[in-house]
Length: 385
Image 1 (cartoon, one colour):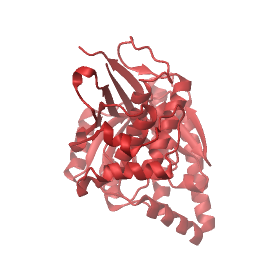
Image 2 (cartoon, one colour):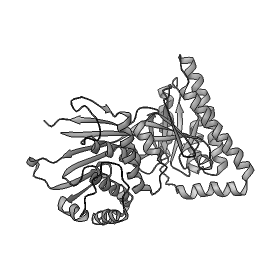
Image 3 (cartoon, rainbow, N blue to C red):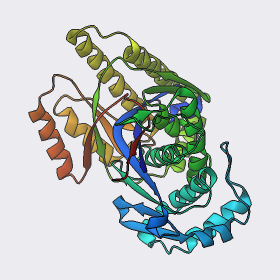
Image 4 (cartoon, one colour):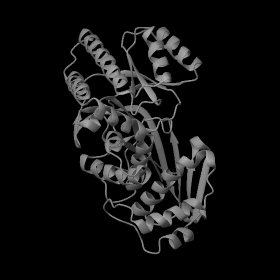
């Protein structure tokens, strides 16, 4: 039997950067997924390897089970989410160094380390083949690493007694609230290996789905009553998140009163957006009115982000292009490149959407259309033929 898991990516709708200074931010899941499948070896497979196949990067890694046992002389198998110790981290680093990952793809090394920790902690040392594919571009602020950790933890936990799932069910299965909490905690441990000190927002959105508001470390989950579609434009420009955050902090020190007003305005935008998303939408007219309000909030938030100094020439190109078609856009995440969101109103014609995408792609950008606010991680059991 094979188990598959899919976990959604995420976007930040409002509040990036300002959240560091006490404002509310709003994040949501998007229906672009990372998929992980796990197939444990059987006696007939005649295999004694743990294999990891990363389809999107055309990389495959394998470890003899004997080598992993040597790296982990004491079992790290755990029933509860556990942080990776310094000693085990060194052992994992040695296993990853032996892989000789190409320099151009060395960024995935931390993801491989997270894989080894989650796998050995949840399943112990046993042979299997794990295959990963994703609709999310790496390192673009769409939560690709969190979706990987959530999908991986889900697939591995599905093979244990720690969660309650109906193996006879056909199609995608959702976890119970209690089981989702376990999945999320394990995924967070994986994120810590990849990012050091993650906020936990990305994995929470990927695990639970829907809308999440967060302020001063407090997370509030909300279900949206609105079905919205976003055009997500990846500028393909890498960004230095730490430098951008530091730059906003320095601007705060230079202009404390002004920046305090900026952060307060962002907080109000996030709260109003949440209110709009969760209020009833009885008819098409109400939906149109909501979309118009959301467009205005996005434009205001983008203006405030520009005043924080986190925009970029490529982001401005996307803004100018979409504005020609009277569409509202804003950066999402750290800024300085990365991705830009454009709301696609329900009544917008497909012809206009095609024109916008064509113009953006001619600039060398990558475009995705995604629904927001959907469900979280799911698993699917596939019986061997």
